Image 1 (cartoon, rainbow, N blue to C red):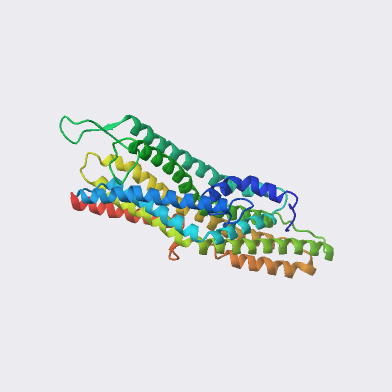
Image 2 (tube, one colour; image 1 turned 135 degrees about the vertical axis):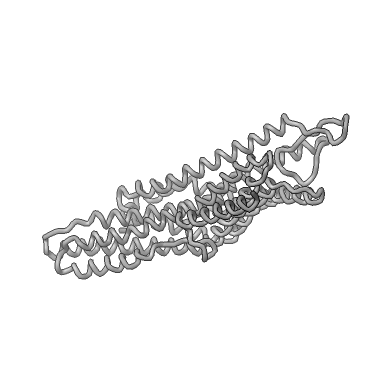
Length: 398
């Protein structure tokens, strides 16, 4: 029932979600704590976030224009640029939907009030999966950026002309060739600062849906365990029946609120999932075709292939958990309906459980763009089709 953990709700919810909320505030998807979006500090952070994303796109897009003017084509750059474009589109969508995102976080916190003592551990088990993935992703991005920066500091490029001087290189793609001081040092430091901050924003953008979905899965697991904990009784008193009726009604109300929360996630995130799914698929197609060629440098694309394959899988992983947890409510409600209850309330209790079973038979299905169902089954089918396509190309080329 709501309020069962009211004395500990705020601190416990914040202790679980605080790190996720910090990342969301850092990307300006949520206002700073105890402040509004219109507060000067919030506006200043928003300005820095927008500038960082704009600067990152200027670096990669400017380099792409230079590459085109030289008549060159670098496949690895195209893959990197698609990742950057996908991140930018998701960032823009989340920035425009930040009020809806605030509502989702508030709804998530309100659902915490329905938890009974000890059920917070169930929610935490699911939240930790998103927490560990986010930290793993953050660590890898920071290590990769540091490697690029250190390499650029010590490495040099060959001279453009015979007997010329070696050229210095910047850590990341840039729209112009900078060699003279102090322009080189300014560009080097600016690239490093912007890219490090983009890493935090990239992780925040990537894990927004993951956090909300896994919290919903934890809440659904709490409802399932409550229903499974219902014990029958031969006590046919009305008092016993009233207690059982209130307990089942509380479970049904909690389940209803979770489904409303999941529907909000579904409508808010479906466009974001569209970019999260199809940008990796596009990169997988490019790198897969490149690996089929007889190119000495083709094996450097294996890293890009693995990264995009992993990213595509994660788009299906959390929604699959949501499907499973929402389906499990039906089995739990059926199990509860088999328990003997007081005759005075048996019909009411079974009626509530029946409606819960009916609702759970249609599991919560998230989509990309409203037409691609996200699940491990979809991941397997699309991967199989992609593999078949590459095999056809290989046989055709041979």
